[in-house]
Image (cartoon, rainbow over all chains, first blue to last red; front, side):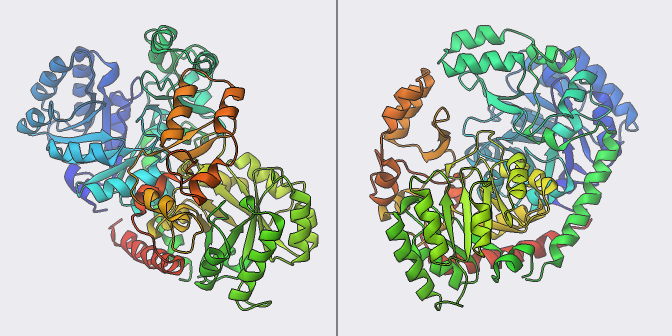
Length: 319
Length: 319
């Protein structure tokens, strides 16, 4: 399948697995890349030495140097960001996705080291900034996405056409896409490929706790909500922790109180340690369409099969 | 173009113009139906006698009894709802879209009078209730839609596949759809047609004030926001009135204070009278894709043309 995304990343299918905290380790990244997509490691929840180990294992699983490509997602607010950038360059990681910060800061250095760089945005305005910073591709992520999210609350349906107008760079759609139908919809709107988070976060190879996966594959519609908007908006499953946040927000709690309520390490506690009551359970709205934990390679194949079927279907309407 | 929606409503294209307060009078409904879509009158902002006049004018414009079909949107929280239902039956309106209430209350009576009935929902749960109430079709409307909106904040991208799973009734997607690409995306997700609000609210035949149309066709992404969630969630353009609401909500203002702040007749003031600072400017997130005021018939034709082009494009990827 040739799109600008498959050509840029030298992959078979334009499906990228999001680099998600506490989910995206070497097993998931390698499984997605082995199936013909692009697997990303999530550096956001790894110390540099842990990341180095995951890079080595991913590369080994994919056939060593010259094997199938993989990438690393780097949140630009990472505390040891300079050490991390040095590591990516030293390890000659082929592809880097940056998110949550200013792409002007590191893109030039990463590109000079021969890497392909994509940047995650939540608006057309930031897509233009990313292009000006010299990135090779953009990921446009809508309001329905899990975890940290944009302030403008723009949904994937309205975001993709606007980012498409703003830039001709290869464009990946993210947020609300878990199936082949979702992929066809995103590409009809103007995307060249998709970044899938939630469904891979709940795959067999995800490093998330099994209790987290079990909870998230039984969610109903409306069971996640974007909250903590006075700090940094994040989409979470409604649990006991969320209920306290919602109560505090309804009575107008300020930044300090919310910061204290949030405390530290809650996403690790929820996603990696499986504390379903008190952890931050970051997952996308589309989780309510995901009912089973499946191998990541199988997910790639199912998405492609359903994409093809849906594409045949839309031909059948007499128009 | 044959889909279950075109067959149910006996129309040429599966495009319905939303029955929007202060926008959807006889000129807009007649223009959309004349172009082969289904035009709806918005009863929510009309006294029964005004509605009777609009029904008569729409019918006349469409060739009298036996002419092209049209419909009426009825918000079920309408104060004079019983008088309104009596009127619809007396006038033998062919199609009724109900919204914002319990479809079990009136569907049977409307159906017994020979009408085709659709109900607007914002979740799969309510789609099941609507089907149980005996409606002929459902409209599933996502978080990105303008005006009043569901509490679960489910976006069109995640909503449509879930409603598709919940019911086999003819399904119209709404929220974020203003173009042929949006229509193709919605139908790829499982819809049989689309209800377009924002773009028709900003058409030449819309009864909205020209100042409202001018403001809404120059919006940027992020210029609308869902607010007043403690009362009834509504998507509005950010203006002076919105700023006061946002300030009150941030400090935890309660229902009483918000109700007082809202007062009465603000949507009329904003949409119909063109008070851009103090009115409620109800419009969808997708307004930032709409840059011109065009005739409604032209909009129907453009959507169909773009739908066809986009459908050809998705065939071209090698997969």
